[in-house]
Image 1 (cartoon, rainbow, N blue to C red):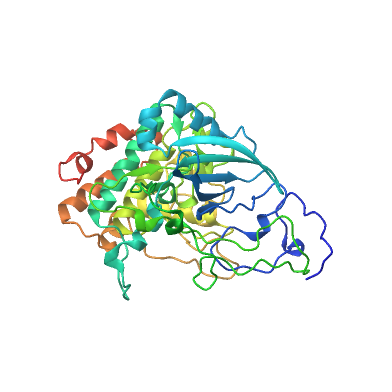
Image 2: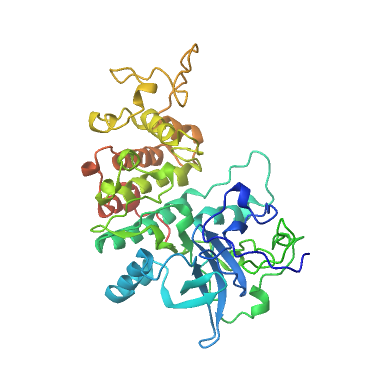
Length: 429
């Protein structure tokens, strides 16, 4: 390794020609994001997760002898983030109800590291997300070919109801979650405060895939802005109850906003976005109070079937693909929305009949691509959820009731909680 120090990297994400490090294929944060304005190389007990703008770690509160989750934001995000504003508001205005439905903010502080000043948020410790917990259920171990890995219907229903109750709390206080998805719903943990640190500490072992291979610069120089290796996320799954009585809380308010102050750019995953959010050229559509509700309707379908309603893998035409799938599953867009779809002529005749489903349109000299269309109900039944015909009918009716193109016709969270599927008495407590 060269002894001379490299120049300070720029405070922005690099392009391919400016990359500093050898590629790391482990499921970690992107190594190139360790630069001034980026991640802070923080070592505590265990890595719980990461996202585009933060890493989350299990830490020990030595003063109170408790474990906490420490969220470290990239340094280019200032203290006055929407997330912090909303968490402070909840803590001040509705602490008891907030703690019941939202991961609790315990403390906040600033930390000076080699990549700048980082806002650090201290939360109650929580377990894995709804997105990942299903993989750890004992009935799916060992994994067998053809096995459908999805939550049992009673678990899916309880998850959805508790997440909806959290959403009801937020909407009651004029707050939209903005990124309502299974990755932002966390299982509560058993009490782990009495457990020794050694039992919870993450081992530093590349062979067990606990960490990435050592971080190496392409030029062989020593780097001052990165850790020696990256930790793979290890949620506290072994300490998470999943039998009847489990608790779900909403987390990651990084995309949240007050209804009176909508953002200009959505963070909702594309497949969970309402059509008016896809077609809006500015943030004007964000003042719609039913965007979370649309996402919830999509998640009812997804958690009951383990299939996304709209699978949008990402391409140059992902918005078109999403709108095409919505048209197939839910029916034609109303005129007001269809007229905003600037590339609709690639796929539809002037009288709104689908003549081509190939993304980007029909290439010169080629024939239009026409595929068999399946409604939401047909897709639901084809997935084979493990419920009887009567319950399936109720679930499909609920999804239809929620996923209406006209936002004014969508039910409120309170209305959905009164729906027959949620209000019937057979839901485990």
